[in-house]
Image 1 (cartoon, rainbow, N blue to C red):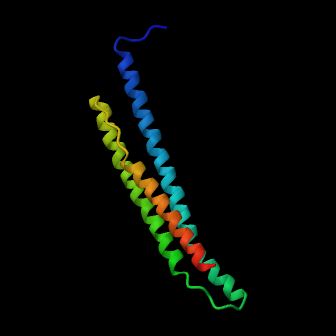
Image 2: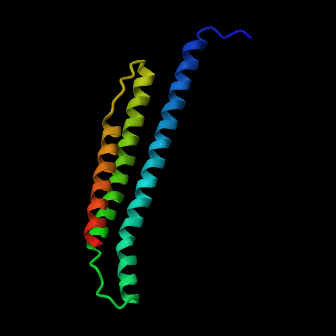
Image 3: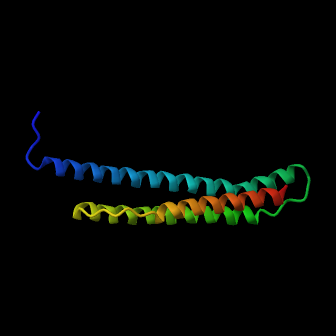
Length: 128
């Protein structure tokens, strides 16, 4: 099996583009998971109010869960947009042969996850 002349760089470039596409799709899956979590959290307050009505107890205000859920959904939209921008930047860098890794999107995803976790922890402690 003989490689075509110059095929090595072309194969490498192709692999880099395919890896870039897989990375974008992984970010999209992450954004969808975050969006789903936001939806569930937003509806959690509704569930607690319904549960209180069935127990004939005064309903708990569900405002905090709606705000946290909406923030998570908003963060997922932002994450999807940033990952798309990152994809196109990496694509252009691959074409130029000058790829520069960046960590902004990863840092944002970790920060949102930590903040959301802390907000949910406080919410669960306060509503108990």
